[in-house]
Each structure stands twice: as structure tokens, then as C-alpha cells.
Length: 118
Image (cartoon, rainbow, N blue to C red; front, side):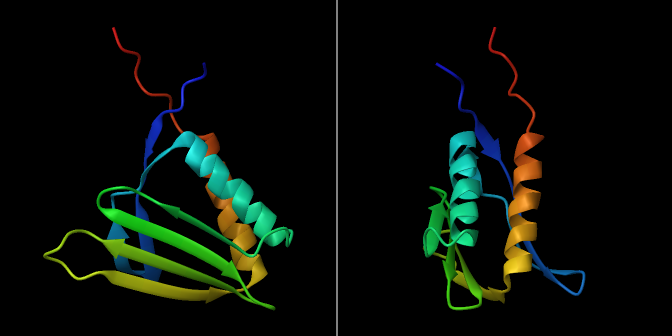
């Protein structure tokens, strides 16, 4: 059976070069990233209308939906009961989603293998 390591990631949303939000909880299996990339490609090819992926604790959810000519990305970050949930909504065009998909595919192809256990 092939290894399916957890991939430690972070999410950063910025506007005008300034960080608006950062989240370091994005820990997904390599296969989940592969599933996200293939889902985004299916969305771009109009084979499906939305995709969603989430981490466990703290909760980070990415939901990407296709409308007539735009894509809506909803990002929800819910750290714990003491902090309010933060929701970010972005409207993008197809070129932005293609660029994000290509960037994510490149990043995933450069993930380093985890150290071997003794």
C-alpha cells in the first residue's frame, strides 16, 4: 500500500500585498489535495458545479461554486468556541481559478516526503 502522508499547509488571503487572514491549520492527506485539484479541474470543465474540502480541528472549509460566468469561493475558519467564525467570500473569473489550480498542482508536486521511521 502506498503512503498517503498528511501535508502541513497554510492559507493566506491578502489584498494589495497586505495579509488579511492567515490560517495554519490546513492539514490534509496528500490524496485529499489530489481530490481537490481534480475537483477544481472538473469544475473548470463544467463536469460539476461545486466542490468542498475541510480540515478537522480547527475547522477550515473551502467551498468553490460555479455560477453562470463567475466562481464564488467561500472560506470559513472556525478556531474554537472562544473565537468568532470568520467567513471570506471571493468572486473570481475562470482565469483566476485556473491559475489557483495550476499553482496548487505545482505546490503538491513539490511536497517533500516525510522522514522515515526507524
